[in-house]
Length: 236
Ligand SMILES: C[S@@+](CC[C@H](N)C(=O)[O-])C[C@H]1O[C@@H](n2cnc3c(N)ncnc32)[C@H](O)[C@@H]1O
Image (cartoon, helix red, strand yellow):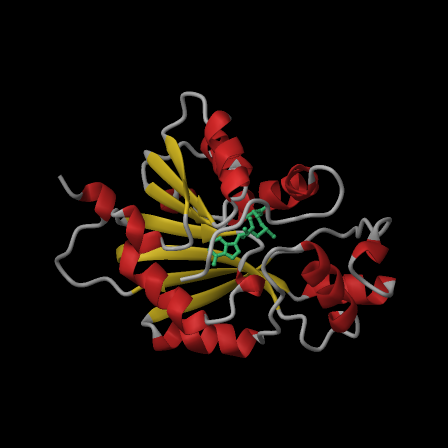
């Protein structure tokens, strides 16, 4: 299991917070792409939660019964726990979802899959903590044929505590299917406008930035239901 560390994004004076600020709009979009029936009244896992903002925003939009966020970055998890308020959420400093000792109706990861080296082990872990018929939503863009791949990887590896991997969409889908999931791809970027002002942060050209938007998906992977089994939140 991967070791924990203090912070994930080390750029600037408060990299985790800056990342959180940058991700607000993408989170709002992702929430609109999810089926509310997979969230409301359910038990939710946020894998790679950082400071926990996504789970809190999700709860405001689609109240769930209980949520757990896990992350390897100890200081980000500490911040998350100070911000939880009265929401039914807890945050745990680990990369091992099984160690949380709970099953979930729905697992989510936003901007995390691209950092996972061993996809088979990751999807096995998610499978182990999901109820039968449970769902894993994971945002992912195949960047392997993006001309800015090396540039992007250099930036992410310089500031991120874990390194960018170069997995293809085929590798991700094939591994999910091998672990018994059925897989749908929901297009993440559906707007008629591209906000390109800051493209140079991760891309060498505007065209590469647009290519990345166009290859971004919210993966919806559903674990097979075992006939006669009730889902986690239906269990008494
Ligand atoms: C790019 S950040 C995304 C954070 C948050 N999900 C968001 O959308 O803003 C990736 C996060 O995943 C965490 N992470 C990376 N690998 C992990 C692992 N194997 N287990 C748990 N957390 C991990 C990092 O510490 C970091 O907080």
